Length: 197
Ligand SMILES: Cc1cc2nc3c(=O)[nH]c(=O)nc-3n(C[C@H](O)[C@H](O)[C@H](O)COP(=O)(O)O)c2cc1C
Image (cartoon, rainbow, N blue to C red; front, side):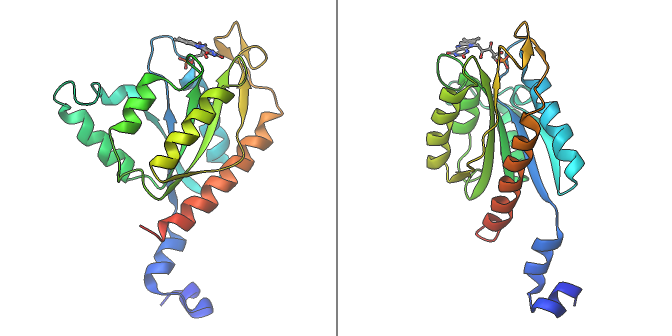
């Protein structure tokens, strides 16, 4: 019997849940050559790792080589994608704006799984000419259908002021507090939703 069990009368299962660090995937939403999403993802991971409150990892959709859903044999990538999502308790979507919405690659990757997404939490970090706000709002609608609880705090990065020439990421300091506040909410909800799964 552990200390939490003694103090709070928690069950062994509850105690394991409390003591085990959550696994949070930082999902890169773009896959095109020359994309800036790895720079943004690594920046979020750097902030997240300093917190020490979860296991944070970059999840790069491009590495899974998913075909468009239903068009071809999904191959090993689909199984690997499913396994990766299953191993995660929550997500941070690095979301770029393409024609006022999310990328086709992210939508396809979202469509490729169902149960693996359910009852988990997510935050969104977006970028674009208007901070990627339109893409992020579209993404929220999709996340609802997948039973992913998206948190309120949403860092929005401007292609004009947070990037040089739209390609070299130089985030303004003001975003740091917002990223941490978003992660606070993702961690709280990811932990809470774990009890439903
Ligand atoms: C096909 C396409 C459509 C785009 N449409 C928009 C848009 O509607 N609004 C916007 O703010 N930026 C738009 N952009 C600019 C992207 O937000 C910008 O290129 C960003 O760096 C893309 O993210 P990535 O580098 O990770 O691919 C578009 C870019 C592409 C490639």
